[in-house]
Amino acid sequence: MAEGTIERTYYSYRARAADEHHIDDITCADLSLDSVFERVDRSSSSPGGSVLYAWARTQPAGRDALSARL
Image (tube, rainbow, N blue to C red; front, side, top):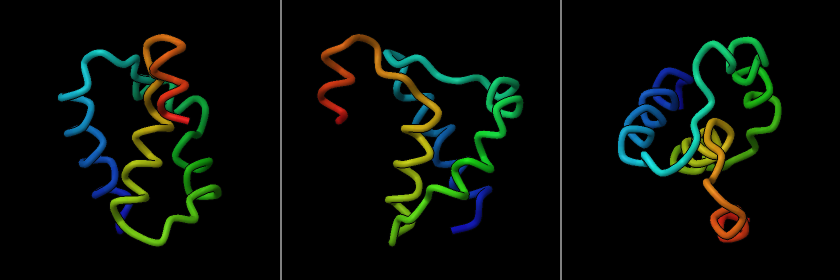
C-alpha cells in the first residue's frame, strides 16, 4: 500500500475517533514518525498497515482503553 493511502485511511479514522488523543502533523514530522513507521511495519496486509499507522498516531484516552488495545 502506498504511504499516501495509509495516511488517507488514518485521517478518515481520526475523524471518527474523537475520544482518542491524536499526534498532530507537526509533532509527527518533528519525530520522523513516518520513517519510524516504515522501519517497524511488518504487516502482511494493507489493513494491517493502516491499523498500525493509526495506532502510532493516536494515544488511547485512559488506562482502560490502553489495556484494551494491548
